Length: 281
Image 1 (cartoon, rainbow, N blue to C red):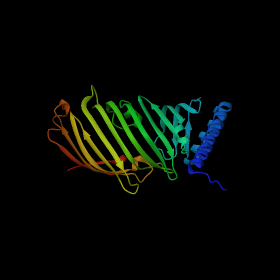
Image 2: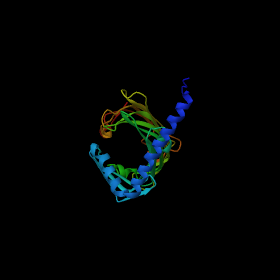
Image 3: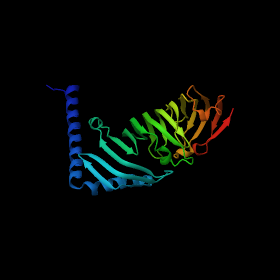
Image 4: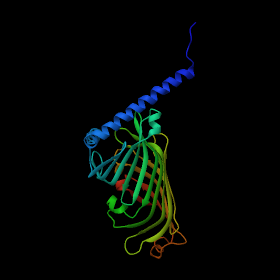
């Protein structure tokens, strides 16, 4: 008599071997980190960054189990318009994804008063950043972005969503991002003027098409806008934006802006982000 294995029996054995494989992989990684932590990791970091022409420098490397923490990080080269500076960068494996045989890592970034986190998953043709969370003060943004105008910004920045990036160029392909600038203030000198709360959204479900964006909010200065963003280039400053923007004064409009915003102002937006054009309508 021939006895055939039931589907559930085969599944149990398959699951067992998957768990064993994951355990062995984790053990080997742990041993490598315990025996040669910094030398091994330095080599892995250099090897990973090399194909993209990127240089990653840091002052200190720490390990905690399988988690890696880098301090005073500087990322430069490649197609970056300017070096990226972070106070700390932390990478930790996602155990749930390992059990599903879909390796992923949790990424944590800190710079100035802004903290960001995401889960990074590698697919065949793209990289997925899931569970994106960004929170912090916007006060340091002008200096970080090297804005040509010495504007003073205040308030809290909140961003959430997910995004798919091209595996080679890093350009955004699709996804959803929602941002809020809460208790926004801005000024060119003296005490910044209160502006209100603003929200912006970006979404795209087709990599062959442009992203859609929407902007709304404000109490002192009210903004309403919508349009498209074309991200065909790997350089953000070359992304093409098109759309319409309306600016008007609200009930709590700052005294310094009353004359300028006595009537609503409407603009057409066009051009690359680095050379954005505002055409009055």
